[in-house]
Amino acid sequence: MSTRVITAGTAVPGPDETSTLPHPSAPRHDRQRFQKASLPLLFPAAALLIVLFLAPIAYSFYLGFTNLKLTGATARHHRFTGLANVHRLISDGVFHESLYLTAIFVVGSGVVMTTVVALAMAVAMQRAPAAVSGVVGIVVMIAYMIPPVTIAIMWVAAGTPGGVITMLVGQSQADILHTYPMLLVSAANAWSLTGLAMLLFSAALRNIPADIVEAAQLENAGAIQRFTRITLPLLKPTIVTTVLLISLMSLANFAIVFLMTGGGPGTATMILPVYSYQQGFFFNDLAYGALIGNITVVITTIFSALFVRFSRRDS
Amino acid sequence: MSTATISTTADSPDEAARVRPKRLNSEKVVSTLILVVVGIIFVAPLLWLFFSAVDANASARLEWPHFTFKNFTDAASDDNLRALLNSAYISVVATVVATVPATMAAYTFSRHHIPWKGPLLLFILMLSGVPVSIMIIPLYEQYLKLGLLSLVPAAVFLGVTSLPFEIWMIKNFIDSVPTELEEAARLEGANTTQILVRVITPMALPGIAAAAIFGFINAWGNFLVPLVLIPAAEQAPSPVALYGFFGGQVIRFGQVAAYSIMYSVPILILYLAMARLFRGGFTLGGAIRG
Image (cartoon, rainbow over all chains, first blue to last red; front, side):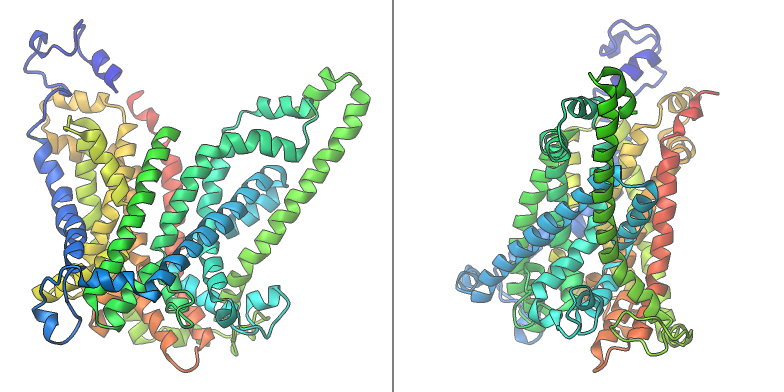
């Protein structure tokens, strides 16, 4: 961008010296000082983000230390209760389970299922006939585009006795929604995110220079060797950023789990966002729900920061 | 391509020619097999959805339908159609709330000098990763106090949740728009508003439209925000209406499937539009050549 500005200016040897400009009246993109014109342009976005994005998060951190309820006396007049909620959280068995289940869900569904299937597909699509790759690619992308509520409906049907998944595993009487609920919601989440991961992997695979692969073929490297020695190392940055992105999106995929199981049966699929909602709006304990939400914010912020860091290094 | 390289360099071209196609074929077979298996797993739930929607006695089973359109006419009840309209209303409001401020901010980030621009942009990118569900309790409390628990305020919030990512999408697009036209306009005495509206917006329209579609899809698909922030049943959008289908003793799969299709197809069309816009976006270079 900076080179463009220099060529636009009229033969000024030192483009950073504003005092030597031949036409002070001719405006140029001033990269040195803050322009007043920036303020009104930035104001709407900044105001909206501060009032409806940052303030709610900050307020949520405060609410986590109060006794706010959904109904009753403390619904209107809550007060600061210090670390009472935190003490409760530390000894809350369901919260401990929820942390563990969230890790299982994000790692199992996002990292293992989504990433492995997407990577295998992206590699296979380079070698399979174009017609097969095209059709399967379209199907997987449709799965990615479908809204979460529809996905939940499809997967509830698929997991009930006689449903599609029971049919595919050959046990049509199995009630997977009740016997393996975490596996089913994880599969539904992976099903919905694989398309995105596949797209990112396919783009990265296309950027691998063909001559490296050809050189390896000349050396009689087998398919597996080429994959582990060339493809995987070259794809590593993309894999890292994709894993982080899919993890973030899995954490945000509240609707699929909530609609399919509501966190149950029992607490079998009670991931953090669902537990936060349940405490807040089923058990009327908004403050405690906010505190659980805040734990989720801390976790996502770590993932987000890592994602930003790795994707910057990537590009 | 690779076979040609082999035959000119290998010591015994005959042998190479004999071995290589075989290996390529086995790779091709394994690849095709992987894709077919994955494809079946991915297509099965979709097939169920489409078959059930037109099946007179639809169940959770995947079976050849007894064709009927009654599921669609049943699903198109007044309440359900109103829910679709509510979804459209919410999504349009959210799209405008997100896209107009995002375009203004994106232009500023792309062209003006802003202190701490890099860290600010990274911060905005990080915000786009924050799950909406964690803001719902504080927002519910505030909206309740201010009497804002209804359709439009919920839509405004949904717009704000798309804002960080839309700023990024549009900024990246404006970065690729050449500055020459803008400089020419400035020499003619155009002010910043005129440049933004008359020069930047038309040039960056594919990027802005793609961002707007992202905002629309984001609002259309969200379930939790309308569930909590819109208590009035007559204002509820389609995802909440679909949630109502779960409530009964028996899920009427045919109707659910039909309504799910009515609700999901607009999103598929918008995604196709977005893909087209992005392809158009990268051939923008011609604008300054004339």
